[in-house]
Image (cartoon, rainbow, N blue to C red; front, top):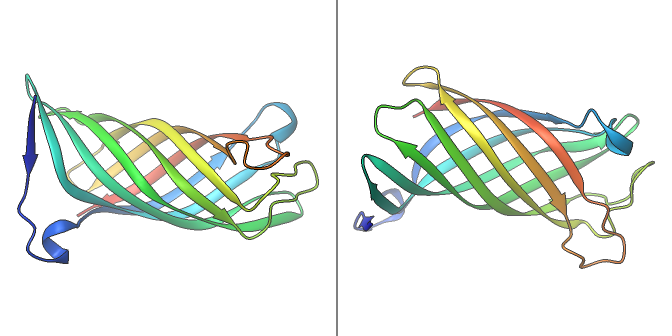
Length: 167
């Protein structure tokens, strides 16, 4: 395994805008069946990547998103910012992605759930498919909870579909 790192001489050298897009999440089962999340996001390549051999690479990324989360009749603003890793293979349009993002919500109480505090963590794992050199569709399973920082910690699992533009 080899660490590849691009020299960094300024902000533009350190962060490279990789993609931007929209996502929508839903949970069709259980007590959270009415919860949904919609957001816009951007993702930047970080200068750290690892050559895993046989044309496999692991790329570090930074992601930011903003949108809303809620259930019928009550919504909250939501924002996330944090790292992720993308595992891909040269000339293969499918990649695996995972990460954990600190998350802020403008409210933590809803009709059917009390998240305890507005500070949460959102972890995800998913698949990306590059339809073309500029368009990506994605699926991720994500879990949001406050990691037991509050006595109320019900968590929220969502299936999330995304569409993004690749720069």
